Length: 278
Image (cartoon, rainbow, N blue to C red; front, side, top):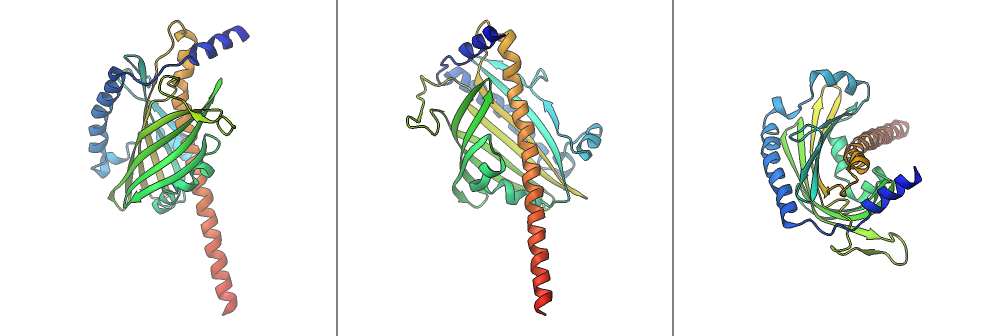
């Protein structure tokens, strides 16, 4: 077993440089085909919340419904010298409002608090109305630990008072070596291992009678599986995006519900103090 793990680490840790023009084009083409469908669904209330009837029970019981997308329906699309991952996840947040959800997901300076330990640091770089520029330091731990500094353009929109959405597109992802240490630095393109080259996420927030349904589709681009290691590395590589999405949705629910309870407690305390002064 030790020899297998060593083989895995050695193969996956080999530098993969930046995506080639063909790899980057394949990702851009995939996104260009996926986004019109997303945009069309977000234009109508009847298609905005695409929860299937068979999933409603699992969501009501607190489950997370994760679905592999892509042409083969397995969440992974092999492209020249790379791999596209496409997963969708849905979770139900009982007893909260859209404002409760947005108060958390737009609180980018505190994202590291809500999404630790995978988000190590977070910062709002700038905001213009419903358009945000944010920075996140991410950590991925799956046999090897990888730290990445990333930046995103995020745009929010509203269909109506019960339906909000956001589109997030990465603009920069840099792998960090010796993170937090005396020799911390960003790896050059030639040194990068290609653990993640691109990350787009498309969020939907739907108000229902007793809470909010949150959905996210995440489309990412990574290096391909090292030659000869597909039998060993492939399952790990395909599982990471699914697990990351599921974790993010669970952390969103926890952060929103906790903050909503705290705000309700504050309001109750304020009302009690007001009554006592009377």
